[in-house]
Image: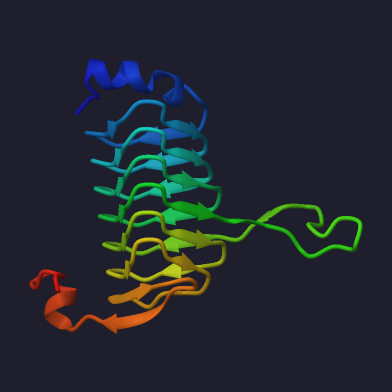
Length: 177
């Protein structure tokens, strides 16, 4: 299915850049900035002011809420929900001498977010981290180490709160209380 004329007009500047490709039924808000190569799967939703600098891949049916910031070398799985104001930051430096502690060159340590994961509002994920399939990262957390599949983490730095049992992992039980 083709993008509607309204969506195309909104996204025209972002999608005329080389290396940006997308699937069907994309939903995109105002002021989305994509710098390729960026690959967006079918039915991806990007709310306003999302900024992605590739190479980045976003899987089918994933959702990035407003003001998300995604740096190079990020892979987002299918059906991932990323809350507003999240930052996926892969940039880092080696520690240099006293005249410049952030030594050159900049490098990008990859981030991988597994299928079905959920990042709450204001989460920051640092480079070199894998967030497992079905994991939940609580709002405001700082993730600096890997998160196991089907777990809930929270805090600064994020720490394990609980693991989901098989029925919760399958989505049969709401995550309340």
